[in-house]
Length: 269
Image 1 (cartoon, rainbow, N blue to C red):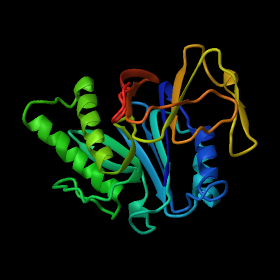
Image 2: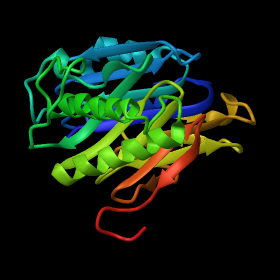
Image 3: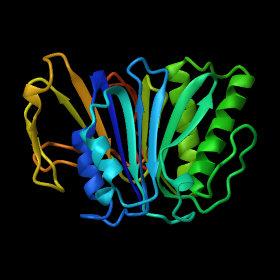
């Protein structure tokens, strides 16, 4: 299985501390050595920088350089890959990028979807993963909702509703944990396993779980800063991470939860 990482913040914030911790799991402290990727939206949310490589993140000079860069964004998504469907190749590395309704969208997935999904133009997979096929299928489904007047591209509540419905359908077909962002909001769906952590004042020191590296966030942040991290597994060993319920979905805007559905598949909230 792969591992996911995302950031949502109310001020442009870099993710290099968390990305460094995730990268260690890409071949050093973990077996997710079949590629990695990082997508960082411009602070205005309209453009996105995407970096992907089909080699272990833990030993990649490019990943190390990115971990040291000051890539500040309101939303960022990263991924390390353990190949289950699709060969080891750049085109099969997450996150995936598409343009939907004049918006830049980024998608990353952890799981397994054995059933073939039907996608259609203009959302055509470039690689051979079930994850990218799911992304294309999802965007086509959203286009249909817009076409029949059930959804407006700028309606956060409507998008959350449609993304949640699509996520539940995919989770019924296999294992589906996913992150999606358009640069303004971050959507997270934990079909089986995701964790979240929100940092706000008073900020404290944090130490990575996979490296002897710590950061005093009190010296790097302002009193009004809010940063939420979503990760497959907790990335630090001295902070209180909260595991999402199976089937729980969140829509984060500026680090805060704007929409949430804690209902688990087959369980009570």
